[in-house]
Length: 186
Image (cartoon, rainbow, N blue to C red; front, side, top):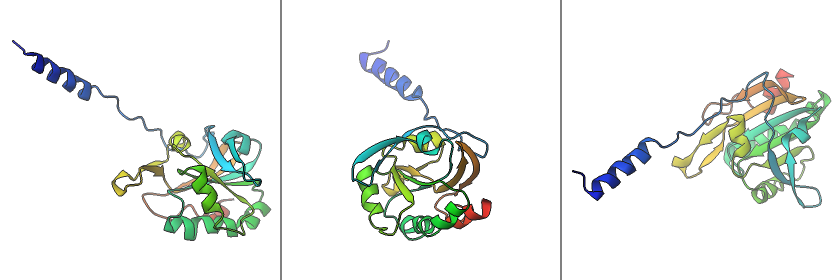
């Protein structure tokens, strides 16, 4: 005969055992159509805006690159400056937009963008809850480092919503997703 406590233990065990697994999307790949999603940014008038990724990329040739976080060393010293410095060259090769996505809130992205006063071409887009990063299948769990869910480092060349180049880094590396790597692929 089970006591009420035994029944509670069995019930709790069943809940733990039947817990739904976390669904992870396959990473975006060459030939895929990029998912739509809403990202936030501050415009030139310092107004908070929401934009759909498809509205930014439809009918255009764009680079979407992602970094694990604002103000982090590799992102701030190498990855972002490379795209800012090479923007003219990228645009001369037909790139219409350069979109930076990071799992940060729009206020952090605004502050980070201000640290690059010469930037005229890279749009800093916030994916505050990592919703778009998950849709791309490029999330990175950095919880053990106290950072939560972040984006893997990547660079995509997208032509009218279709991925032509998908350079996705392994772990914390920075070997395939630079502006120079995209220039070589164009």
